[in-house]
Amino acid sequence: MSDLTIQLEAYSAPIRKQKIFCVGDIHIMDKMYHGIFNMYSEELLRRHKVVIVFSDTYVKHQPKTLKNIFIDATFRIRDNQDLRLAYTYIQHCIKPLIVIWYGNDIPNVIYQNKEDITLITGGLVPNNQNTSIFFSTKSSYNEVYSILKSKMKDVDFKTILNETKASDVSLVWSSIGESNKDGSLYWFDYNTIKGVQPEINYAQASEYLRNLADVLDLKE
Image 1: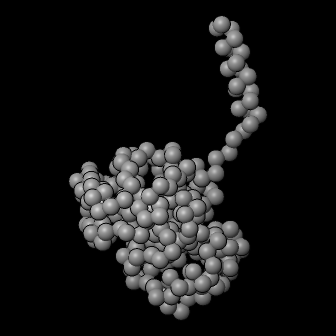
Image 2 (image 1 turned 120 degrees about the vertical axis):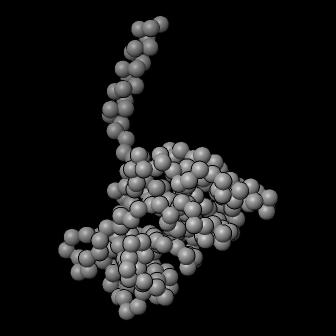
Image 3 (image 1 turned 90 degrees about the vertical axis):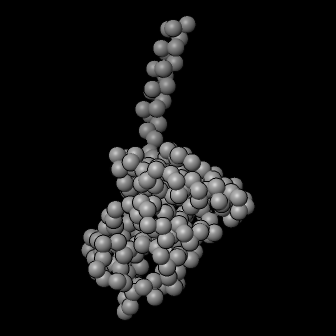
């Protein structure tokens, strides 16, 4: 973020008890969920139970980006009985708990729950109870403005968005730890988060496989 006209701080809020919303379609949401989740240390995440819920049009979704995350329970909501089962599990599960929710039919009781539950969800229209809203680098001015115009007054979103796009970072609104009731804006770089874009050294991998094959030949 160097040499920017508008300087934003990097997003670094604690994950506990947050209601996080990611703005975008299903492919963007997959990457954003994974990036946010991997921003936090493995030690911190091990203290949490993790539940993932698929509902609405996402009931059959199989996100590859979450395959390396240890998940304690998965629910696919096809009817009210499935929804009750998922909520009962969430309600009685050991806390702290992280719930990753694909879908729009999130019960309001989960937003209003005062227990140690973190909710990570997404789509196009955030809930007024969200504590942090993440945009992608592809988010348009109209998307950002329509969501944040009621939260922040007299802010030049167009200039800020131009600056973040020029640096290939995303924009985040958050009210966590803010005395300002309007919240604040931050930047977030998904490309630097561990695990989002794993690099494979093909030369080393090839050498390892050759050595492994030699060892197996000797054993025969």
